[in-house]
Length: 372
Image (cartoon, rainbow, N blue to C red; front, side, top):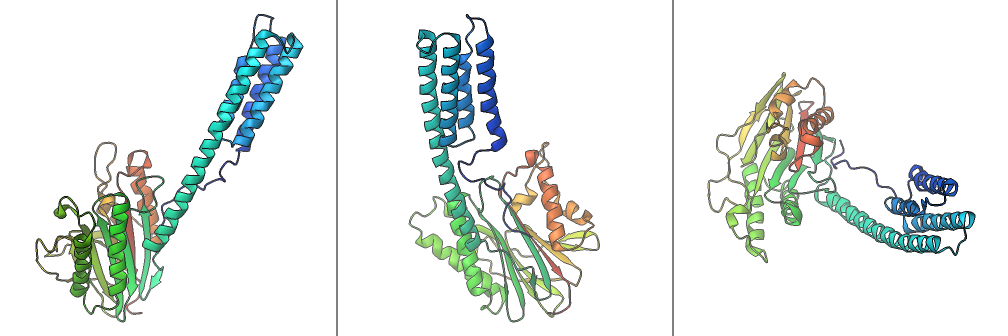
């Protein structure tokens, strides 16, 4: 499943929408004909300014200027037919139409420049996403995986939610997390955690050592920041780190203040609650409890759903939170891709206007065989 948030395909900047071009030309034709046939004391020429004004809202400066020129030509035609082009009333109408056409053409140019800038920024965001939040492989050893990222902002591509997976000599390790905060700072913190995970996940012998390495990376970044946070206790990352051996029907989990994964088995959604959760990454130095992995059964046919709090904190029009365990347990389909498609559609339907209040990420992992 594509991990990128869907957004509408972009047309080329300044490319006119052909069906809409019929509107200003039809308006010019209608006003011209009616103005020629109208009584002498009725003047409809001022309505011609609407043609270039409407065009500027969807077309580039060249088309806007062209429509303005056609409107001016139509006004001159009306003046010649009705009286004369040098008639004072028509002269002022023509001058006003020329000035307004120039003004809206400049406006169309400025809008086109702004659209180009947005397109460039969007391209940078997409490139950053490919580097920071890489798509997960569909198959890793005895596992099938799928992932999805839903951005709260329509133009956003990535934020503080994160996930990654890597192969080791004995199995697969995964992380899902959520950086506190929003904007570029959250993206930078997410990139830090993901970079540390990818660097150490296949090197550290056990899960507690790996999570300790992640904690040290986050702590070192906070200490070396040019502008440390006003409240160090407010800079942290919740995370769930998993180790899934190829030849053992188990999953080992360390939760650092993150919502518990769901084990989907036999029509039930079972939260994998650890007995001794660790503090979020970045806070362990304030509450040093150590890291201990807890094991849970994970057999062929089972599925584990990882998610961030943007999923379970999504509210409907009445203020009710999204009931993820119930919706996941009721899902009758097969495979991680189909599960995430179902949950995405259901989550957006649950949220007013199909808009989330916070970024949301989900990863589904299915064990399909007993060994790689």
